[in-house]
Length: 343
Image (cartoon, rainbow, N blue to C red; front, side):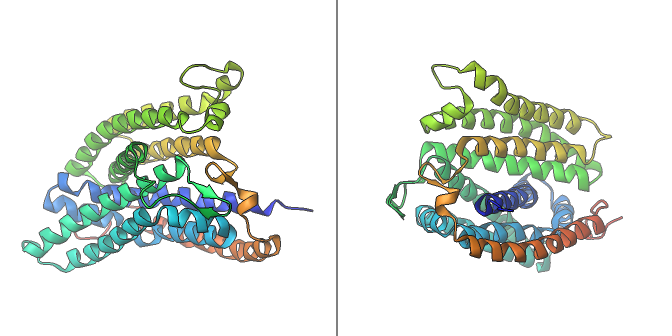
Protein backbone atom coordinates (compact mmCIF):
# COMPACT_ATOMS: atom_id res chain seq x y z
CA UNK A 1 0.00 0.00 0.00
CA UNK A 2 1.34 3.41 -0.99
CA UNK A 3 0.91 6.28 1.47
CA UNK A 4 1.01 9.95 0.56
CA UNK A 5 3.67 10.76 3.16
CA UNK A 6 3.87 14.52 2.45
CA UNK A 7 0.10 14.78 2.96
CA UNK A 8 0.27 12.75 6.19
CA UNK A 9 3.02 15.02 7.51
CA UNK A 10 1.12 18.13 6.48
CA UNK A 11 -1.88 16.89 8.48
CA UNK A 12 0.32 16.07 11.49
CA UNK A 13 1.98 19.50 11.48
CA UNK A 14 -1.34 21.29 10.95
CA UNK A 15 -2.80 19.35 13.88
CA UNK A 16 0.16 20.20 16.12
CA UNK A 17 -0.14 23.90 15.26
CA UNK A 18 -3.88 23.87 15.96
CA UNK A 19 -3.37 22.17 19.32
CA UNK A 20 -0.76 24.77 20.19
CA UNK A 21 -3.12 27.60 19.26
CA UNK A 22 -6.07 26.39 21.35
CA UNK A 23 -3.99 25.22 24.33
CA UNK A 24 -1.20 27.78 24.63
CA UNK A 25 -3.67 30.35 23.32
CA UNK A 26 -5.71 30.28 26.50
CA UNK A 27 -2.73 30.83 28.80
CA UNK A 28 -1.50 33.67 26.58
CA UNK A 29 -5.03 35.04 26.80
CA UNK A 30 -5.07 34.76 30.59
CA UNK A 31 -1.82 36.76 30.68
CA UNK A 32 -3.32 39.50 28.50
CA UNK A 33 -6.28 39.75 30.89
CA UNK A 34 -4.03 40.41 33.90
CA UNK A 35 -4.42 44.23 33.77
CA UNK A 36 -8.20 43.91 34.22
CA UNK A 37 -8.03 41.80 37.39
CA UNK A 38 -7.19 42.54 41.02
CA UNK A 39 -4.02 41.29 42.69
CA UNK A 40 -5.83 38.40 44.39
CA UNK A 41 -7.62 37.48 41.17
CA UNK A 42 -4.30 37.37 39.33
CA UNK A 43 -3.09 34.74 41.78
CA UNK A 44 -6.13 32.62 40.96
CA UNK A 45 -5.54 33.18 37.25
CA UNK A 46 -1.96 31.96 37.61
CA UNK A 47 -3.20 28.88 39.46
CA UNK A 48 -5.62 28.20 36.60
CA UNK A 49 -2.78 27.83 34.09
CA UNK A 50 0.27 26.86 36.19
CA UNK A 51 -0.01 23.04 35.87
CA UNK A 52 -0.38 23.03 32.08
CA UNK A 53 1.17 26.10 30.50
CA UNK A 54 4.68 24.67 30.00
CA UNK A 55 3.33 21.50 28.42
CA UNK A 56 1.16 23.48 26.03
CA UNK A 57 4.26 24.73 24.23
CA UNK A 58 5.19 21.14 23.34
CA UNK A 59 2.96 21.47 20.31
CA UNK A 60 4.82 24.55 19.06
CA UNK A 61 8.07 22.57 19.17
CA UNK A 62 6.46 19.64 17.36
CA UNK A 63 5.01 21.92 14.68
CA UNK A 64 8.23 23.87 14.10
CA UNK A 65 10.48 20.83 14.32
CA UNK A 66 8.17 18.87 12.05
CA UNK A 67 8.28 21.65 9.44
CA UNK A 68 12.09 21.61 9.45
CA UNK A 69 12.33 17.83 9.23
CA UNK A 70 9.48 17.04 6.85
CA UNK A 71 9.43 20.15 4.65
CA UNK A 72 12.98 21.57 4.67
CA UNK A 73 12.40 23.67 1.54
CA UNK A 74 9.39 25.39 3.11
CA UNK A 75 11.34 25.96 6.33
CA UNK A 76 14.27 27.49 4.43
CA UNK A 77 11.90 29.94 2.70
CA UNK A 78 9.54 30.80 5.56
CA UNK A 79 12.16 31.37 8.27
CA UNK A 80 14.11 34.13 6.45
CA UNK A 81 10.81 35.75 5.46
CA UNK A 82 9.53 35.80 9.06
CA UNK A 83 12.84 36.11 10.90
CA UNK A 84 11.99 39.27 12.83
CA UNK A 85 8.46 38.41 14.06
CA UNK A 86 9.50 34.84 14.92
CA UNK A 87 12.49 36.16 16.88
CA UNK A 88 10.20 38.63 18.64
CA UNK A 89 7.77 35.82 19.48
CA UNK A 90 10.50 33.59 20.93
CA UNK A 91 11.99 36.42 22.99
CA UNK A 92 8.54 37.31 24.33
CA UNK A 93 7.83 33.68 25.25
CA UNK A 94 11.18 33.43 27.04
CA UNK A 95 10.65 36.71 28.90
CA UNK A 96 7.12 35.65 29.75
CA UNK A 97 8.40 32.38 31.22
CA UNK A 98 10.99 34.21 33.31
CA UNK A 99 8.32 36.64 34.53
CA UNK A 100 6.02 33.77 35.48
CA UNK A 101 8.66 32.19 37.72
CA UNK A 102 10.02 35.40 39.23
CA UNK A 103 6.53 36.71 39.97
CA UNK A 104 5.80 33.61 42.04
CA UNK A 105 8.81 34.32 44.26
CA UNK A 106 8.41 38.08 44.62
CA UNK A 107 6.95 39.68 47.76
CA UNK A 108 3.17 40.11 47.25
CA UNK A 109 3.21 43.82 48.08
CA UNK A 110 6.63 44.67 46.65
CA UNK A 111 7.73 46.39 43.45
CA UNK A 112 9.05 43.08 42.10
CA UNK A 113 5.58 41.51 42.06
CA UNK A 114 4.17 44.52 40.17
CA UNK A 115 7.04 44.51 37.69
CA UNK A 116 6.87 40.81 36.93
CA UNK A 117 3.07 40.95 36.71
CA UNK A 118 3.36 43.66 34.05
CA UNK A 119 6.14 41.68 32.34
CA UNK A 120 3.99 38.55 32.19
CA UNK A 121 1.05 40.49 30.72
CA UNK A 122 3.30 42.34 28.26
CA UNK A 123 5.11 39.18 27.20
CA UNK A 124 1.78 37.46 26.58
CA UNK A 125 0.54 40.36 24.44
CA UNK A 126 3.76 40.69 22.43
CA UNK A 127 3.98 36.92 21.81
CA UNK A 128 0.36 36.89 20.62
CA UNK A 129 0.83 39.86 18.30
CA UNK A 130 4.06 38.38 16.92
CA UNK A 131 2.31 35.11 16.12
CA UNK A 132 -0.38 37.08 14.33
CA UNK A 133 2.24 38.95 12.32
CA UNK A 134 3.79 35.63 11.29
CA UNK A 135 0.38 34.27 10.28
CA UNK A 136 -0.56 37.43 8.38
CA UNK A 137 2.80 37.63 6.63
CA UNK A 138 2.53 33.96 5.69
CA UNK A 139 -1.02 34.24 4.34
CA UNK A 140 -0.36 37.27 2.18
CA UNK A 141 2.33 35.30 0.36
CA UNK A 142 6.09 34.99 0.38
CA UNK A 143 8.26 36.08 -2.54
CA UNK A 144 10.12 33.09 -3.91
CA UNK A 145 12.79 32.92 -6.61
CA UNK A 146 13.38 29.30 -7.53
CA UNK A 147 14.00 27.63 -4.18
CA UNK A 148 14.91 30.71 -2.15
CA UNK A 149 13.22 33.58 -0.36
CA UNK A 150 13.48 36.65 -2.59
CA UNK A 151 11.70 39.30 -0.54
CA UNK A 152 12.74 41.95 1.95
CA UNK A 153 13.24 41.89 5.70
CA UNK A 154 9.98 43.74 6.41
CA UNK A 155 7.68 42.22 3.76
CA UNK A 156 5.59 40.71 6.56
CA UNK A 157 4.71 44.14 7.97
CA UNK A 158 1.57 45.23 6.14
CA UNK A 159 -1.92 46.48 7.10
CA UNK A 160 -3.19 42.94 6.51
CA UNK A 161 -0.66 41.32 8.86
CA UNK A 162 -1.43 43.95 11.52
CA UNK A 163 -5.14 43.17 11.19
CA UNK A 164 -4.42 39.46 11.61
CA UNK A 165 -2.14 40.17 14.60
CA UNK A 166 -4.76 42.11 16.55
CA UNK A 167 -7.44 39.59 15.57
CA UNK A 168 -5.37 36.67 16.86
CA UNK A 169 -4.61 38.50 20.10
CA UNK A 170 -8.33 39.10 20.59
CA UNK A 171 -8.98 35.41 19.90
CA UNK A 172 -6.40 34.33 22.47
CA UNK A 173 -7.95 36.70 25.02
CA UNK A 174 -11.32 35.07 24.31
CA UNK A 175 -9.82 31.62 24.90
CA UNK A 176 -8.31 32.91 28.14
CA UNK A 177 -11.61 34.37 29.36
CA UNK A 178 -13.47 31.16 28.55
CA UNK A 179 -10.80 29.08 30.30
CA UNK A 180 -11.27 31.22 33.40
CA UNK A 181 -15.02 30.61 33.26
CA UNK A 182 -14.22 26.91 33.39
CA UNK A 183 -11.49 27.06 36.06
CA UNK A 184 -12.67 29.74 38.50
CA UNK A 185 -15.61 30.63 40.69
CA UNK A 186 -17.30 33.65 42.21
CA UNK A 187 -16.47 37.22 41.27
CA UNK A 188 -13.57 36.32 38.98
CA UNK A 189 -15.74 33.93 37.02
CA UNK A 190 -18.36 36.67 36.61
CA UNK A 191 -15.66 39.01 35.33
CA UNK A 192 -14.50 36.32 32.93
CA UNK A 193 -18.05 35.94 31.62
CA UNK A 194 -18.19 39.68 30.97
CA UNK A 195 -14.81 39.59 29.21
CA UNK A 196 -15.92 36.63 27.10
CA UNK A 197 -19.17 38.30 26.01
CA UNK A 198 -17.30 41.38 24.84
CA UNK A 199 -14.43 39.52 23.27
CA UNK A 200 -16.56 37.13 21.26
CA UNK A 201 -18.18 40.12 19.53
CA UNK A 202 -14.75 41.60 18.80
CA UNK A 203 -13.45 38.27 17.52
CA UNK A 204 -16.47 37.74 15.25
CA UNK A 205 -15.99 41.20 13.74
CA UNK A 206 -12.25 40.65 13.36
CA UNK A 207 -12.74 37.27 11.66
CA UNK A 208 -15.19 38.82 9.21
CA UNK A 209 -12.69 41.58 8.39
CA UNK A 210 -9.80 39.14 7.97
CA UNK A 211 -11.94 36.83 5.80
CA UNK A 212 -12.91 39.65 3.45
CA UNK A 213 -9.33 40.91 3.29
CA UNK A 214 -8.05 37.39 2.56
CA UNK A 215 -10.22 37.19 -0.55
CA UNK A 216 -8.21 40.05 -2.05
CA UNK A 217 -4.81 38.39 -1.57
CA UNK A 218 -4.73 36.06 -4.56
CA UNK A 219 -7.15 34.95 -7.33
CA UNK A 220 -6.77 31.30 -6.33
CA UNK A 221 -8.35 32.08 -2.95
CA UNK A 222 -11.45 33.65 -4.49
CA UNK A 223 -11.70 30.70 -6.86
CA UNK A 224 -11.61 28.29 -3.91
CA UNK A 225 -14.41 30.10 -2.06
CA UNK A 226 -16.43 30.98 -5.14
CA UNK A 227 -16.72 34.58 -4.00
CA UNK A 228 -14.88 37.79 -4.79
CA UNK A 229 -15.52 41.47 -4.19
CA UNK A 230 -17.39 41.72 -7.50
CA UNK A 231 -19.01 38.33 -8.21
CA UNK A 232 -20.17 35.04 -6.68
CA UNK A 233 -20.00 31.53 -8.13
CA UNK A 234 -23.11 30.18 -6.42
CA UNK A 235 -22.43 26.53 -7.32
CA UNK A 236 -19.27 26.65 -5.18
CA UNK A 237 -20.17 29.35 -2.68
CA UNK A 238 -23.29 27.55 -1.45
CA UNK A 239 -20.99 24.83 -0.04
CA UNK A 240 -18.06 26.90 1.16
CA UNK A 241 -20.44 29.32 2.90
CA UNK A 242 -21.40 26.53 5.31
CA UNK A 243 -18.07 26.93 7.13
CA UNK A 244 -18.44 30.65 8.02
CA UNK A 245 -22.07 30.00 8.96
CA UNK A 246 -20.99 27.20 11.32
CA UNK A 247 -18.30 29.47 12.77
CA UNK A 248 -20.89 32.18 13.31
CA UNK A 249 -23.04 29.61 15.09
CA UNK A 250 -20.12 28.75 17.37
CA UNK A 251 -19.66 32.45 18.17
CA UNK A 252 -23.34 32.81 19.04
CA UNK A 253 -23.14 29.71 21.23
CA UNK A 254 -20.04 31.08 22.99
CA UNK A 255 -21.83 34.37 23.72
CA UNK A 256 -24.96 32.58 24.94
CA UNK A 257 -23.06 30.15 27.18
CA UNK A 258 -20.95 32.97 28.59
CA UNK A 259 -24.26 34.39 29.85
CA UNK A 260 -25.38 31.06 31.30
CA UNK A 261 -24.09 30.58 34.86
CA UNK A 262 -24.72 26.84 34.54
CA UNK A 263 -22.24 26.62 31.66
CA UNK A 264 -18.60 26.23 32.69
CA UNK A 265 -16.68 24.23 30.08
CA UNK A 266 -19.04 24.93 27.17
CA UNK A 267 -17.86 28.52 26.48
CA UNK A 268 -14.29 27.29 26.08
CA UNK A 269 -15.38 24.48 23.76
CA UNK A 270 -17.34 26.99 21.68
CA UNK A 271 -14.25 29.23 21.51
CA UNK A 272 -12.26 26.24 20.24
CA UNK A 273 -14.95 25.70 17.60
CA UNK A 274 -14.55 29.33 16.49
CA UNK A 275 -10.81 28.79 16.05
CA UNK A 276 -11.45 25.49 14.27
CA UNK A 277 -13.71 27.27 11.79
CA UNK A 278 -11.10 29.93 11.12
CA UNK A 279 -8.35 27.33 10.84
CA UNK A 280 -10.35 25.25 8.37
CA UNK A 281 -10.98 28.41 6.36
CA UNK A 282 -7.24 29.01 6.10
CA UNK A 283 -6.82 25.44 4.90
CA UNK A 284 -9.41 25.95 2.18
CA UNK A 285 -7.68 29.17 1.12
CA UNK A 286 -4.12 27.90 0.74
CA UNK A 287 -4.05 24.06 0.53
CA UNK A 288 -2.01 22.36 -0.91
CA UNK A 289 0.47 25.24 -0.83
CA UNK A 290 2.78 25.25 2.16
CA UNK A 291 4.43 28.50 1.00
CA UNK A 292 1.69 30.73 -0.43
CA UNK A 293 1.37 31.03 -3.33
CA UNK A 294 4.23 29.15 -4.97
CA UNK A 295 5.32 25.93 -3.22
CA UNK A 296 3.11 22.89 -2.58
CA UNK A 297 3.57 20.31 0.17
CA UNK A 298 4.85 17.79 -2.37
CA UNK A 299 7.43 20.19 -3.80
CA UNK A 300 8.69 21.11 -0.33
CA UNK A 301 8.74 17.62 1.20
CA UNK A 302 11.80 15.63 2.17
CA UNK A 303 12.49 12.26 0.57
CA UNK A 304 9.89 9.55 1.20
CA UNK A 305 12.36 7.28 3.03
CA UNK A 306 13.15 10.10 5.49
CA UNK A 307 9.46 10.91 5.95
CA UNK A 308 8.68 7.25 6.53
CA UNK A 309 11.43 6.80 9.11
CA UNK A 310 10.35 9.92 11.01
CA UNK A 311 6.73 8.80 10.87
CA UNK A 312 7.66 5.64 12.79
CA UNK A 313 9.02 7.79 15.59
CA UNK A 314 5.93 9.99 15.60
CA UNK A 315 3.63 6.96 15.75
CA UNK A 316 5.47 5.87 18.90
CA UNK A 317 5.86 9.25 20.59
CA UNK A 318 2.60 11.01 19.70
CA UNK A 319 0.37 8.70 21.82
CA UNK A 320 2.77 9.27 24.74
CA UNK A 321 2.50 13.05 24.38
CA UNK A 322 -1.27 12.91 24.04
CA UNK A 323 -1.47 10.54 27.01
CA UNK A 324 0.48 12.66 29.48
CA UNK A 325 -1.26 15.83 28.23
CA UNK A 326 -4.67 14.28 28.88
CA UNK A 327 -3.51 12.98 32.26
CA UNK A 328 -2.27 16.39 33.43
CA UNK A 329 -5.47 18.12 32.36
CA UNK A 330 -7.53 15.41 34.06
CA UNK A 331 -5.44 15.54 37.23
CA UNK A 332 -5.93 19.32 37.54
CA UNK A 333 -9.51 19.40 36.31
CA UNK A 334 -11.03 21.06 39.40
CA UNK A 335 -11.40 24.77 40.09
CA UNK A 336 -8.39 26.98 40.84
CA UNK A 337 -7.85 28.94 44.05
CA UNK A 338 -5.48 31.72 45.09
CA UNK A 339 -3.15 29.45 47.06
CA UNK A 340 -2.47 27.32 44.04
CA UNK A 341 -4.44 24.26 45.18
CA UNK A 342 -7.57 22.81 43.66
CA UNK A 343 -10.69 22.15 45.64
